Figure 1 (cartoon, one colour):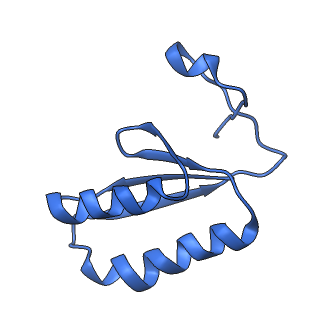
Figure 2 (tube, one colour):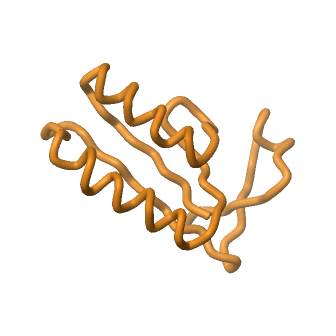
Length: 90
């Protein structure tokens, strides 16, 4: 599983990127997504970001990917505490 978050300034590119990520995962917050899938799918997502989006990013744009393994835990508070899985990030 990965947690992906982004900050993209240009509206059109941000919308396109969001739709792309939604085809592989689900939105947790406005610019935070969870992708649960095989290593192959996670590799495809990363390669698509590199080949399709990275060259279009401006100086203020960024994408962060956190790879979550079985050794990690998730802590959820508020509405998110009703989720099925748990995650702790240090």
